[in-house]
Length: 155
Image (cartoon, rainbow, N blue to C red):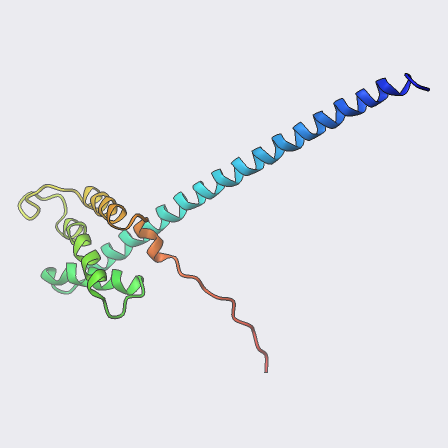
């Protein structure tokens, strides 16, 4: 049985190599898939946070009793939605940078009231770009709030 076992060992080694290659391919695929899913989840979260920001701003502007206070109301609603009860100077700067978007929402596409002719979408993109350049992160990440698990206690 000196040479009869050698082909079997070669066969086993070949299958072991193929099995390891298959495992590595699966691991790489799972890693790539997980990264892609995380990217898509981030994009989805940002899209819905943007949608909610715009909805809240539009609602605040349309519900304002006085047109000249509509932007201030929207600014207040956005600060509240971010959990900013009393705004710091940094938060004020962020809200100030968001003001052109709110003004564009309030005035609409009219060139009389919006002389720069900037649309609300353009103004929002400009704000998002400014925020990313200023902080290195996405503005909508501010809406993430960690909610710790709280034990349920029955009495």
